[in-house]
Image (tube, rainbow, N blue to C red; front, side, top):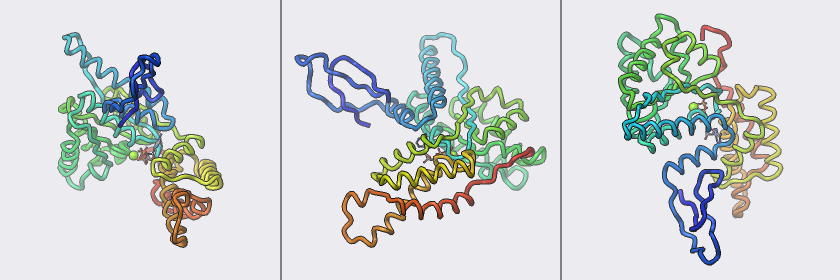
Length: 327
Ligand SMILES: Nc1ncnc2c1ncn2[C@@H]1O[C@H](COP(=O)(O)OP(=O)(O)OP(=O)(O)O)[C@@H](O)[C@H]1O
Ligand SMILES: [Mg+2]
């Protein structure tokens, strides 16, 4: 990432990117392009996410704490063991995977993790069909994740089947891996809030192993619109005023009817926008010479067609949330 700076008195922008203002005309020198450090770029990427204020604060705190512990170790001061395994609680589309990916990169940049990559798994990737199969499958995923983050989505489902379920075996292997590869692996267990709380309650050994728990709240209508605009800008698209109204109407309706918990949050916005982009492409096929402006603009009709397809897909993709234990 490149940021523009010129020499003089230092100031810091909201994104944490260095901006240097000229001290005086006499001292002012020409502006130069200076590359932000990878760590600054990744922190700016975290800051750029819409909302998620508590999440951003915890992540910054954990990174700062980890760095200070490392520096203390270099000075031979007493250090507390760094236990960086985490629990993410939140509904689908609230940014859990996005934040986990950023955390991996941040930990790599502050030399906690050697690679910082993310391996995202769910029950089916860990649990096998016969005795011994689960341990083998889970160990394989752990191996892939060494040096990075192992992210287990819907982790509570590992405890769902009761004592005889192979999910228990996967939990045991994960717990052992956390201890054995303490320096090489960050384990993140993610899932719906209530289910994850049940999971931790029914597995008391887990609580102390996951000192960092982060809540991902559902996005408000305002935040969903801001996420949509950000996604469009990144893709070089824009909304006509009518398309903006239509997107807002669809999102409001979706929050009202389905409830934020099940409407897919930011994922719904992404699906809608990507579908509207495809509808726009079909519409533009009728136009032999679309202008630059037309190539960028999404219209109301694009969203009207998109919602039909997206709703059908969302219904299929969004699992019906279990309501009572056993999960
Ligand atoms: N705060 C945000 N700002 C901008 N974009 C976001 C934000 N949160 C999520 N997104 C975008 O929304 C999409 C879904 O996010 P993500 O996959 O991280 O959610 P999730 O909580 O992991 O969902 P799931 O439980 O369905 O896996 C991604 O394209 C992501 O980039
Ligand atoms: Mg995810």
